[in-house]
Length: 96
Image (cartoon, rainbow, N blue to C red; front, top):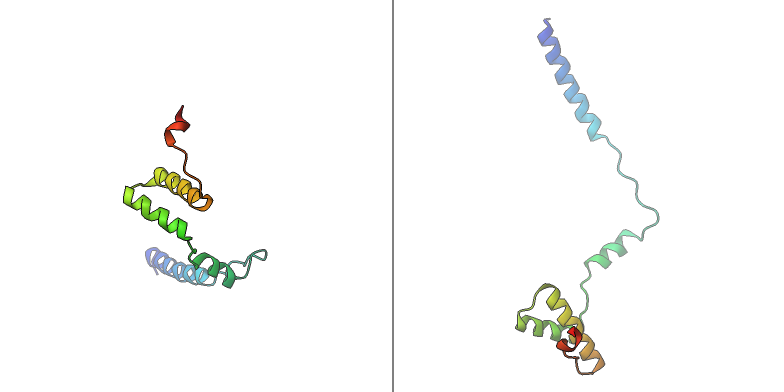
């Protein structure tokens, strides 16, 4: 056997050995301090129930075409107003 054929045999054998070594790796250990898997996946996948005030304020923000920080600020003020029943303070008064 020549040197080249011996190297080829060794290379092929190492590929087979490496493939089986990776196929037999152990599964990662589960965390002991977390909730059960069923409750955590149910919590993550369950959609939030939105209040009527929140939905109405979202519709108003959509109508005004608000996005990003402006939308978030508008919705928070709108929801506070809707739940509290008080009139919203003018925005110009805050910028003195």
